[in-house]
Image (cartoon, rainbow, N blue to C red):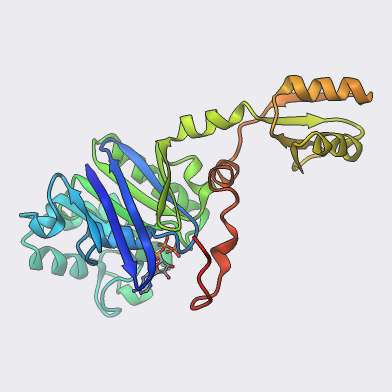
Length: 309
Ligand SMILES: Nc1ncnc2c1ncn2[C@@H]1O[C@H](COP(=O)(O)OP(=O)(O)OP(=O)(O)O)[C@@H](O)[C@H]1O
């Protein structure tokens, strides 16, 4: 369990993390989501004792990180993709971590197998691809067999195979009863991975609910419409206050009203409908709905003026 209690981090007048109170529970994958700059990394750094909160507290299994008796046996983390010295082998890199943290060296071959690096254990890190480096970082996090895992953007830059692999690994670690917190700004990535979501925007909590609830709450208002008169019917729906986008096929994705209202408008305006069905909204749509479209600041250049909050 990770408990955040009024967790706040201010840099000058800017609050990177703003009064975050949430419990991250064991036995499931919790997606920690928010656009670039939302405060995910800062939160994780405070959980791991790398940054001092301005206010509030973060606890892992009931204690602050600094008070953990055996930190690496309690929590494993991958905060960035960097690994050890390029001339070192994967095995010696992990042995170094084990030795300096009082962990059994016998864990090294086990974690190398878990992350699929058993066959390249003696290769130099300088020859490792990004995907292999990510796997090595995870191997290091697993060395102490911790009950809690924090992974900051673990799929960044991975190929589809790597993404699938990390997804499976996170799910199996959660199934073993561990607490797995994984951050991402790729909302769609989390849709098939996380059981539970903690969404933040500008350092503040936006949602703390199960993936199923988050999507179900919004699916009642999302529909797919197929009609030979797409643009004309889209205009009718928009005039009625609905939001319409064109789907991958010649189909309209409509949000804002239920099927009955859409059907009634088609009848009223004489449009033939070839399909009118519920649509599972994407996580992006749910996020935009929750934050009121608060994604536009993702590309704000560093050092540009702060926006009013
Ligand atoms: N050391 C620092 N000094 C000043 N501002 C900082 C510092 N670290 C982070 N910030 C600011 O705090 C905010 C949150 O940053 P943070 O890296 O936690 O976001 P994030 O959600 O992890 O984003 P990303 O997805 O890009 O990693 C950003 O506006 C960032 O510029």
